[in-house]
Length: 192
Image (tube, rainbow, N blue to C red; front, side, top):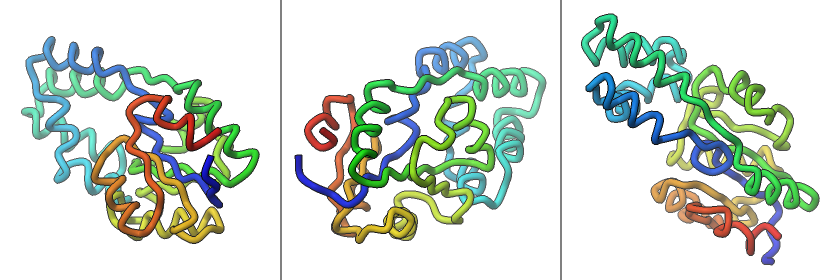
């Protein structure tokens, strides 16, 4: 294993997984473009930058989907889709935590603390950098710099893990070693 002074890890799509099959089923049942609409940067962006609440985002999606009761029910089901914590990833990060700080770096809304609590992840990481709290979101270079600062490490001494290629590229542009996450096997060599 190469040595790093800190591990910076994304939350959604790496440590926390949503059931995309259920999301697609809800979309099909209601005949509404939930995924595309909910994650439209114009709608989700303000919430991930702390300029709007998660509830404001939900309302904006409902409005974009027609604003009727069907849109409201569909969005309520969509945001209630269960998630799981990938126990393999959690174990690998726990092992890394024995040697270096682990910082979660996530584009999130104002309800992140509640989500971490529901997932049993409150206090799991040494620090959490939420885009909604710091006012910048991945792939903005500043969020990576904030995460490295919170870890007490130079960016060039950080390992960054994310499931989105554009976020990995942004981390690499700061000199971080970065892993494009697809499966826990992607992390085994780097974290053990």
